[in-house]
Length: 158
Image 1 (tube, rainbow, N blue to C red):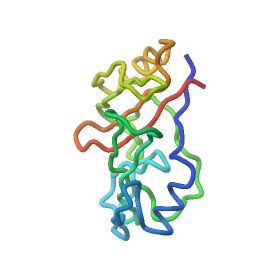
Image 2: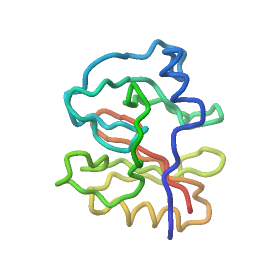
Image 3: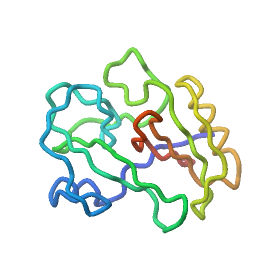
C-alpha cells in the first residue's frame, strides 16, 4: 500500500505567519527561539537550535463532530526553502528526523469517525499505517505525538 503525507491545509501557514491567528482564532505563540528538536509540522523535520518557530493550534478536520480535535503544531516562523521530508520510516539517529519515537495512530472514516486506533513504536508505524489504509472503510490515518498530543501527520493512500 503506497501512501503519502498530506501537507497542512492550504492557507494555514500563511494565516499563522501573517495574521498571527491559529485555527481557534487565538493568537499564536511566535518569535521564540527553538531549543532544538521541536517537531516542525510544515517541514516535517525537527527544529534546529536557535530557529524561530511558531506554536499554534491546528485541526485537520473539516466537519464538526465528536472526534474533531485541535492539537498544537510547531511551524517555522519563515517558510524554508528545502525539500520536505514526507515519509516514514523513523530515523532516530538523524537529529532532524521528524518521526523518532512512539506515535498514536487513529484510522478515520470519510465521515470523520474513528474506526480504530493504536499506539505504535517507531519501527511498527509504517506497517500499521499501511494496514489501516488497506481497509476500504478507512479514509485516512492521523498521527499524533502521544506525550504532548501535537498533531504529527495525516496519511492518505497515494
